Length: 166
Image 1 (cartoon, rainbow, N blue to C red):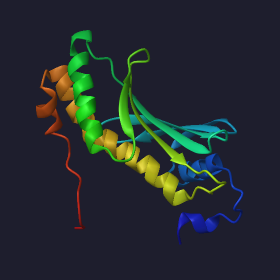
Image 2 (image 1 turned 180 degrees about the vertical axis):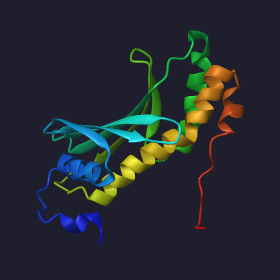
Image 3 (image 1 turned 135 degrees about the vertical axis):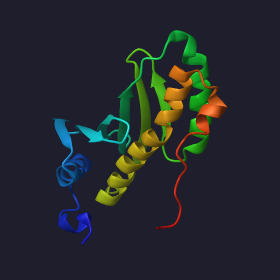
């Protein structure tokens, strides 16, 4: 049975679905407001802070997945070049660096215009894609910023996507 089967009402708020997913996966979460939830998801490299917010104005479920990063000032040009290379490989979502907050950020927006209803599978895929992308590129960011590895060489260590099944 898919997790969606447990939802009876089609009027379920997208953040209610996120909260149900967080409970199902036993993620630490805090319902910040009716339209916003923050979660902590443990990955291989670190714990990621994930916030989802519903914008009724443009009917978009916005997600940001962040982790702390405080690179030396002189490494920023290389980091920005690496971000461009990484984003060329990301088809759903994109990375950016928020220097003022010292955060690496993966962002994605699920547009649900025309009063569409988000499904738990869509939201689960958003969160999973964010964590997998952060996990995949984290070593490249670290090598570039702290190891002085040039962006293209650092990107080569990114964990390749797996295809098929074992």
